[in-house]
Image (tube, rainbow, N blue to C red):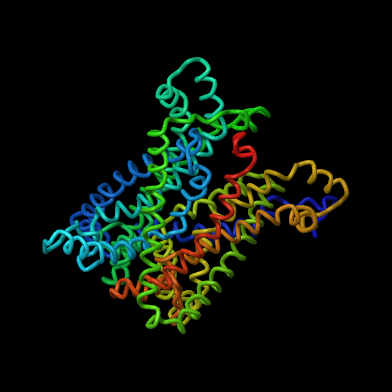
Length: 553
């Protein structure tokens, strides 16, 4: 224990362990960037071939998917958030939390469900052929770019909904009420008051949704869409071309970096849409929601119901139908093994992520130097890095180490045990734990630290006896969020899992790929149930007192 009255350790020594942790978390990204230095591996020829044959298709497919998804999630998320935050209509209280339900549905699970329901031999097309007396295909092919856009839109719009609703609930209702008293028509109130307040939130939410779209592997691979993630996976595992995979990963990383910069800028602008001073903290309490006419109330209800049905209710019903049909043939005995592997990996990664997040946040708070803050910021960027990029970034240095020290066993340590997989999870999801722990630290007054130092309390005692009890709730929330993300993670788990350690996500993908959708419904439904856990927390936050109007009390 280092007491405050002890020797003055240099900042470099104090932050050295945390710097090492941050280096391990940043290593995969650095390894991917360093792949361009390996020019002896046919660098010029590989680059030329990649530019001619791979990049154009990946870029074009990305543009064709990203643009409609951006428009779709912005329109649905903003419209539903405005309806719930500003209007009074039947079912509004239910939609406050129901509009979050699609977040519990992994996009690849929705893809499996819609494939079974909408494919040529699916129940919907069979019913349409019987009803119309026609033969042949009645609906467009779901396994296509258009199908991918539909899946991403109905599962990712809650990112926009959450941010826009928070922005509008804090100040828009009160300002809209003031505009109403000044005689402004409803359309003008929305156009000149609500929309300007919501723009930064819309931008931030859209960027988050697009980062998830870019990082996806399950939907693009299952639908046969040539995105960057699918191309990286195919180049490494199918074609055994690590150079092309690494350089495709750098292109994807560059695109994601641009999206991160846009999202950071939008998040900074969100402060201007938030409450100012003490009055802002209860801004939404005294404001009155607008009550439209019967037609407007019906329109608002339909607008909020449609994405919930498409993003959660219908896929869940399809999975339940598959479970009921194939209940007697489902692999119930092996299900416990898959679930056990998922829970084990999720628990290990969640515990490690919370410990690392607490260490990083504590050092940045106790010794707020540029280095400690920089390490925390770099570690927090991992969530924006797609799983496929992290996999390449971990396997590249393993390959280099094996080539240099053939008998070291480094490759087996990373790929034949859970070490590499947990490492990848930490790189990807420590940012989630950091966000929750950092939020908890903002609620701990700085004078507590000063009082502890005046009493001669050292760093270890300060962390364990003062901060830990106050951060217990934030740490528990962080562990839950990381656990859920780990259970649903697909690309990193597929590549790095040890032999015989299949998880729910991997098995669901493999069964669906083999057209065994009935069997895939069992692990897929389990993933949905796990995904509901953080939504319970989110719905409680959204129902906080300052977010309720007088009719909600």
